[in-house]
Length: 203
Image (cartoon, rainbow, N blue to C red; front, side):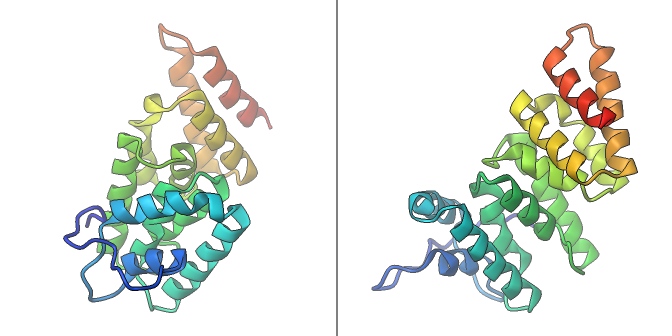
């Protein structure tokens, strides 16, 4: 599964479509999906007219429509990639990979998507997407995330630590401890990253 590939532009009608309608089109069942890049461009253009609270309301509406079965989880991709708010991206990433029951095939394909997006630096808030996957407390996901740790900057690490500290688990703390050990054993030390990780583990 890839939500990037599509042969159709965002559908156009005489009247401007609402942002929710544009996003929902990416999750329509049994229909050709609109091009996600075009949806993201529309999303970014709408940011000045939709503050964080408005986007949270749109996200909640899309989530309700997905959970009712009207839309597929693909509708969350625009939030994962296009939003900068930490809580929106974390929630959207968790929903995309299947917070509620989905098929094994869907979940694995969605995880692969999210990991690829993080590797390529595609999410506007990559740290939040990373934190959401870490919060799944899945050994296989954590093993994949381990190979992506050194791609992250200090702001992204800070986001991950903040999210992990807010909802700590044994698996996430072990992940951070292993990360800290990796950094302290490196020939090229990163004091800022080490301090962020150590502070979270001490909390």
